[in-house]
Length: 409
Image (cartoon, rainbow, N blue to C red):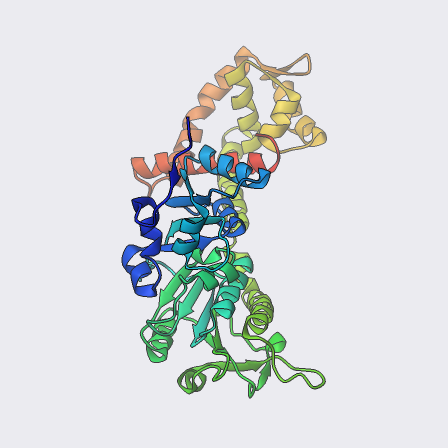
């Protein structure tokens, strides 16, 4: 069966791409055009969706076939198009092998929380520089890209090419003017740092105060607007050696983002440590363990770890020592020290390479279980039934993710 090849620019499968030549058309359609094998592959690999993919009839290398197969496996249709038609669609004088349409990111809801670092592009007009800025921001983990006017276009082919498609995954916030941008950043609690040749601080030594940082970079000719420079908390400069007067804005911004984010982390280090996920989990686990330890010691002279060991063994009837060590998070010596008092009381007994719970141990567990339940209920006192169920689900997911990181899943 002959392959269906598009031979007319009026074909609906290609007419959509022809209707995306201007920014207004792209914004109205909520789509942009990706040109070239590499860009399409980069966007696909990043997980961004593709609406329509067009492949030139003459694009028939092994590499082209492999991309088509990957798109097919991702349930993305690829349409073959006569070479001349595809060149007309792209508006290019040279041969074009691949085109694709991709959705533009939706506008960020104002209620979406800001990240800890924002890159502000103030009057950056060159598409190549814009794309480089967004790509650098994404690569360095910057959460928000901010524009200070309604007209800067992040959907053009040159921006998409320079950003390697990373624009499609960026969280872009747009303000109508520099003044409104400053107000918005102030309300969000940012320390505004602007780059300027007359900056009084070397950015690597900028005195950040622990707030989230918004780095403002300006256009290629005029730089950051006077309105923003007057309102900024800090003006920073990159010191130059020899006869070099300035750097390309993309290069300068990459250096600035790296250095200022490092400075920001140092300034926020104490709060970051106090608020880190690992610390919160560790602290919560220790407090829970201490609460159970206190109750168990008063009731039976046991620790919470010994009670958990008995519960695990009783539930399984017999549990290998290796499994106990994993469940309790202890080493061989620590496990022996935990188990010894329980075997002395006759509650546990060695069984091959593990332990079994005796009838006396089961009776002890039955007597201690109400105390365990009372402590558990006290710890969860302010949580609803739904919240308790959700907490267990969330803990299970965290445990699963941790096991994946450890190579256990």
